[in-house]
Image (tube, rainbow, N blue to C red):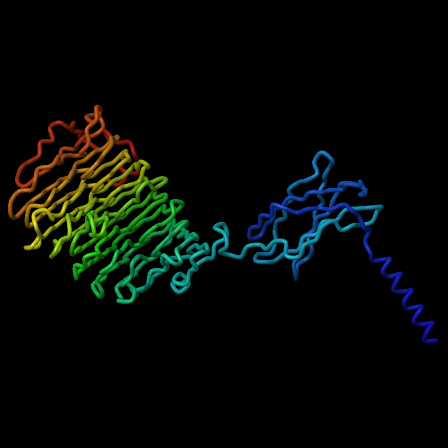
Length: 525
């Protein structure tokens, strides 16, 4: 009896196997070019049927994940079109999916492809289109360097201090969309928070996006622990290392940066890059406005370019918006305004200078080294530079200043639709190596278009008179300059008691008579 039961059981097993087995075939499907988002996926399906075994070239493509119903789609191929791209939508976020492809042979289903965990849909924060929404200050301070975020409301930090979020070792490479909300009442002053090479809210950024955000009542002050090293300072970002960086639609109000650098006058650690928005920048920078804010910089020894065994360095860069636009970087820098803002720079000459130090200071940019032009720039900043020479500084080690209402120095690039209508004052205890100052740019090496200035420059020296330089609106000559560089009635330059003759420039009554930029004109008082 036991033997009979065994035979019957074996026979039944064979029958069940025959009922559930699929037809076999040499035909195969291939899945390639997989691209998944948070709720969608698309990939290419290719059919190869070398023996023409299948009943047709109609396939069923299935995606499957745990806890969800299978999703099937029919795909019609042909001899002429053996492959097509198929798309699935409404998938579960952050889930791993298996993919199957089925055909028909002799009216039976045949599996042509299967791969476990073929793709995984993205989780919130994995793509810019599906950001993690931030609603608290703790969530903001816990951001991951590679994720994508958006503000869900204003954030009030209650005047607490916070460390820069990202460093050169873990630069920000995601995205942050402020959704026009405001970050307010941030007061970065604690010793552990200010003693950083990259001092700002975001710190160090790589290929990333920061956009649509307002800052109000945000302050950086390093009095608790002044810097001694190479430093990059700005309220939003300190340094950018990738030209694919994007900063746009930014507004900063009622904020300040106060920096005291190199008080011990170290021989090698003197470089400084400071702006109210950012320190050393590249990438796309557009539609950025700074209002009613203050930038205070105390630099105790300037760097220059030293020879031989002395360190090769780059100087100090201070701008109302940005300290430095880096060499041959930048992809679109436009629509930047610095309004009703003070830029104050106090230089204490090195006690034992190794060489001529260099300061670049401007109402918007300290120095502009990009090979891309910039346009629609406005400033009515009050810029003040004070320089005190050390008693022991040799005559061949005197500092050089490049100062302009818009930019201290611009090389290679052109300005277009630019207006300065503020004040620039330079007071020096003694004669310096050179003071290069003009209403728009302290130094320029190429022509520009539609430059207008109505501001004032006042240079005074306590002991002696500065070496004469070409102090005017824009220190570069070309054939059409008279038509591209003009002044308002209020424009004036006084250089150690001597008024600079500006009669060669045409006077316009109103900025709107010469400029056409709505962005620039909208910021006039």
